[in-house]
Amino acid sequence: MTPQLLLAAEKESAQVTDWAARIGWVVGLALFVALVYWLMREGWKWRGTLQGDLPELPTAPDDPGPARLTMSGRYHGSTTAGQWLDRIVAHGLGTRSRVELTLTDAGLDVVRPGASDFFVPAAALREARLDKGIAGKVLTEGGLLVVTWAHGDRLIDSGFRSDHAAEHNEWVDTVNSMIETNTREGAER
Image (cartoon, rainbow, N blue to C red):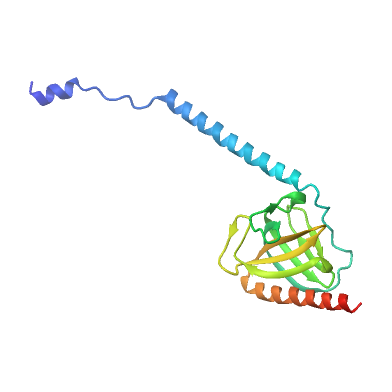
């Protein structure tokens, strides 16, 4: 026999699969993912407990009046005003969802299918602006409508993105003019 044939005959093929080790790694990885998920869920619940002093969210009045503006899009969450990473999770404010916004003289009605709806009275509105991020959602400059409102003793920023981003400027102008009008009328009284 030639030396090459002799070497080829002596070599054995390597074991293709070590099933016990592979199953062990898969089970270990699954347990790790489950642990991380559980810790994230506990952190979310802990944050909700810390924010337990937040009063119940107001509901829309029976007759809010005619709509000034309407918008459909996405609700990206609420944070403590001025702190775009301090997400508020109490009362479902941390749940991202589809949204239907309606602005009336009475205030801002936030209807969220699959999540809790809430209403921001006109007297509680403080500011509307365009921004680029809120609570883990970062968009292009001006891609997010942020409405600042007072609830209890807190100022809250809520972030919305319209299905038609061109609507954002009209919302900012209308909400801010409504706030100025309410402020002037309050000062005159």
